[in-house]
Image (cartoon, rainbow, N blue to C red):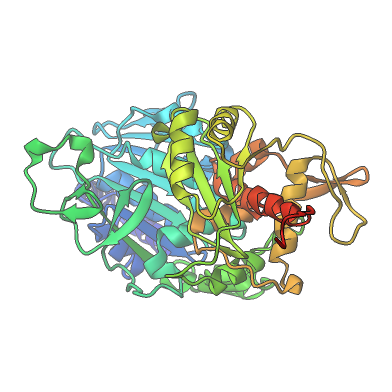
Length: 516
């Protein structure tokens, strides 16, 4: 096409060229391709997912929306060096780089439009951009981002212009690592083939965030939570603005190379066809179920956790509680997690924001209220957990303070492996419990945070000892502390109930009056 245009331009007279130049100023800088790209461009969703396969025009869609539909734009990649291709494409569409400041990574255009380029390579880097509202946020290759960073930045999606539509655009291919799986959950009605209510491409679905969790709702009406009930018929003057929940519309639109006429006859399809599996299925067909593999050094294989969650069923009548695990919030956005074990059946996690567990007595009160059958309580006793243990112990509960930095107390089940510290041992014990060969019927509640936590850490041999990577390293992967997994690892500990132990010992004491 470009070669044909150049030939026609060469055949034109100066007057004809001047006329074309005059007319071209009324043409839009960019127009979407028919099909998926046009569907995404015209979508009224608040959050748009776009892509799947390679070659679907993800970068062009981001550039086109920035140049034609929005005024204050932020375009992000995980790494700053990955922004070059987007900047180059914008330069080609605009025809120059006037107004671009490479040091600031800001493009101030003559029409008042401002495009900012950013990166969030490390957990918490989103704070560099807080307080800076944008009416378009683009997360290019979103599966490479930490979920926490994306969700935090979405909070700054706003405009002072009431007529300006605010949108987020997440472009991505199928994730190739476990860390990128969050995009499948984020757009579950479109991407999770096990979703009970699947959505069509481009269909709007509404999602509200309640207590930090996504809840799919029927429509975009605002509501408040009274008790545990959604109330739609409410007077706004009776509630604080932050108490009003506004669902946002999400959609996902798949696109493939065959949808892009610029690539059909270039040999690009043949290149994708030649890729090895599972990369071929991911890049050619946009298959989100292909090739999400575990790291070979992952402590607990994902399939083992998924199998344990598939076995789980809610119980009206529960067996006696055998153990509790408590991971105490360390501040910020951390949560206090209480895990309860009944035999090898684990109950759903009890999660409390850090503000609800500000001190030892408050946390201990929640623990005691959830306690049944005088079960031993295993508390992460490092730092803030120490006060919780002290209060529980003072209240006469069977509390065990677990300091994961201490020396390991046992070997692995083969008797050959030792552990660098108690923390590594606890993670390995959970691995052994979830091993299908254990055949113990372990059942874990189907919770996506618990799944992500349990599958996050990797291990290595450090000398002759197994070393499971630190909490700090896991935080870098997840963007948050693995509190759910920590609580469940603690709940797995099998401490005898002291009252049963004492009763058994008493029965062995000789009583000369027993038969009188």
